[in-house]
Image (cartoon, rainbow, N blue to C red; front, side, top):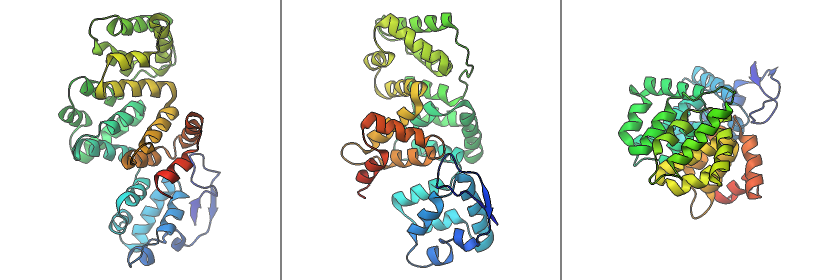
Amino acid sequence: MYLISPATFSPYPAPWIWVSIPWSTFLPFSEPSVSFPGTDEDAIIEILVNRNLSQRQEIKIAYKSTIGRDLIDDLKSELSKNFEKVIVGMMTPITLYDMEELRRAMKGAGTDEGCLIEILASRTNEEMRRINDAYHRQYGTTLEKDIVSDTSSKFQRVLVSLSTGNRDESSHVDQGLAQKDAKCLFEAGENKWGTSEGQFITILCSRSRNHLLRVFDEYKNIANKDITESIKSEMSGDFEDALLAIVKCMRNKPAYFAERLYKSMKGLGTDDSTLIRLMVSRCEIDMIDIKAEFKRMYGKSLYSFIKVSCGI
């Protein structure tokens, strides 16, 4: 007996049903597919994309008990390049996947600032706590220490602040404090000779989403421009990108991810790492919303963009 969903791979699986299915149905990439020349890649795709993450973990356990080998090791030995990254990513619990991506962003060839910003600006407090715990267990050091050793200056400060997972999560909005924060941001940026970046870090990295949405409205009343315009004119480089990502995630996280996907495929060459990470990490969380935002923002489906980008 094995627990499966009759629905295709989706963040909103259909009600569970118990059916009796031979283990060989779930292991097409075992002996005949992985051990001999010519891996059945279509079978691997068919099985994995039609199961959710929890089911794929069960398959991984069953594979070891039935075949006597580690499924991830076999997949890595038989697959390659981007296909391997997608499949192995799909087999990895999301917290561990985020952890590995953060480590890769800092310990690979050069720093992947976009990856650091994307993950740290978009994850919830609870998600960040799980990532921090897993990071320390896996690597014997803290995420914060690695951020400090690999980044610098204002960009380092905003990443460290985000990595703590300590944002206020209350739903209450203090109108007076919102007006005060908006004025503080205006005085620290547009209305000051030189920018006081610390105020932006403190407010954008610690205040609740509902509070910040009110702050953004109040800021526009004071400055007669959107806060993103001020950030673009007052900040620069990775620090600017980080602050803009925070604002976008507070306003509409699926739209932020849709924009990231679009930019990964638009222009000469595809940013495969970003495309793969977003598709793998968000597929069971908010991909339906991301697809809708992508269509709204760019007038074409995400599916059609990926087909062109991947040359299908």
